[in-house]
Length: 315
Image (cartoon, rainbow, N blue to C red):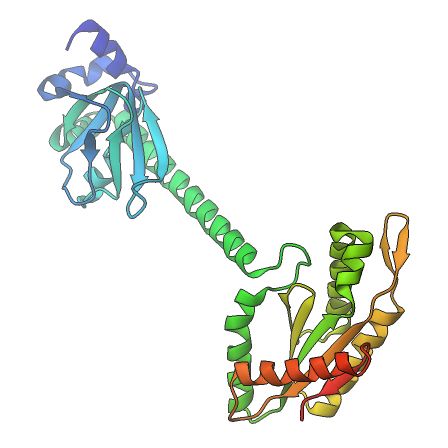
């Protein structure tokens, strides 16, 4: 080992805070390895028998199953392979040279000899492993949080903040199945803003968005905690009312219709009102979600034909 490589090795975190000369002689059996960019150093399917000290360059660490996603990078002064060396199992990650890299390959028996010889080496090795585990835990937590955030975003309407049709396709059948098992009544409401095209044409789509958000807010405030509200499309919303008979569903729909008609939509200096038409379909033991929506839609169209700002129940 030349003087420059010796100096680089001495700076490795494995020898931090100790007299390197006490263990230097043990590294005589170690060999240098030069990696070209993209060359694999550690692979999950290949057993590891060395600790690798990085003298120059950079290594990229990729989690198993996420080969295209970089988990961490390692630079000169750091090492890799320590965990698989300690537990005797295959590496848990893919380690690849991010650029031309030189590493010192320390055989496993040499590592254990240094640990036996020096408490400082043992302490530093434990510190390296603990730090790696702490970083991995943080990465897992971050990944879980991001995944939860993405899942939430995928099922929530960005404009109104209520759930979207994708969420409905999973949640509504599940609740309807539970109602059938309990032999309890339920009802589906389909709500549509009256003359919404006129709102957009008169005031613009941004004001139309304000109206949609105002409607969603009114329904969120006036529905029960277990009722399911979704933005079904455009200016149309759908509600599933579990454990609810037709007359109770009509009363809930009437409360929503009245609250919407009485509410003022405010956008800047502009103030106006909207109304909604509502179609109601009670669910049955035999029907499907598509059947119930079809019935509620037909009732909604009848409400539109009969003058709007009203409620109709499917027959």
